[in-house]
Length: 334
Image (cartoon, rainbow, N blue to C red; front, side):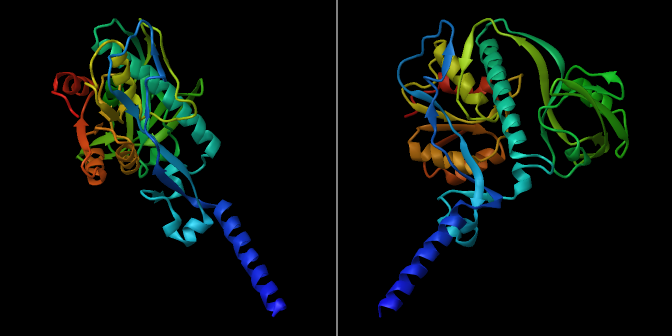
């Protein structure tokens, strides 16, 4: 009897040890889980800024990690509201996790600068922006360029012709025919790199060539005020909209009206709000935190947010200018 009891204990300990190993052993897939939205009041400093009283602007994030082997075997152990995605959706082929971390840190740095420029310009300040190319925001996964172009690359030439902005880039690529190769000169990590990529047909206009990248204006920006933004280890570009709203709040615009406002969306230099990822998790996080209103990019992002809002007010916006007008001119929102 004692031997049987000892065997049962040994088997139990072995089972626990196996479960522990499977829990800490990472799998190949990644999992997105809801983060905890946080107010920006102590993370954004603006020279001469005095925030309006009452309410807060929140940024929202998504926690990204590899799934564990145990979560793969027992999916019910995954956190509520999580989504599992294939490795290539987070790490394109040939990209290490360290490279991804550096990329998201660079995206955050640019997001802070662009948000500052957009907010100050809309508030009437003189912001100097000298164009120097077209920065790659995203690359479609199903085009040849995906293997050669990276987010953060700055395109400065097409077949030897200098380009200073997205319009000039589109013009030069438009001179080709779908299927033609183009040589793009890009600035990457401080060095000029030549990349030859085939064009493909635009799905909306088969006669028009594209390379399958989303771009924004890259410029040397000079701000008239000192602005400091620090989110610690949080990376990525999706906090641009809440950054800009908090800067406006710090400079006297009543964007909260006593409410707690969460927002997500990458900002382009013209103020456009660009699509971001993880809206399911961001919406769940905002809802759990109890914010009153959640501003999100229009389109699929807004649809994903509505599907997970459970009564929380979702406000789709196309631009920072629209968001600022909606918040400052509407009646009390909570």
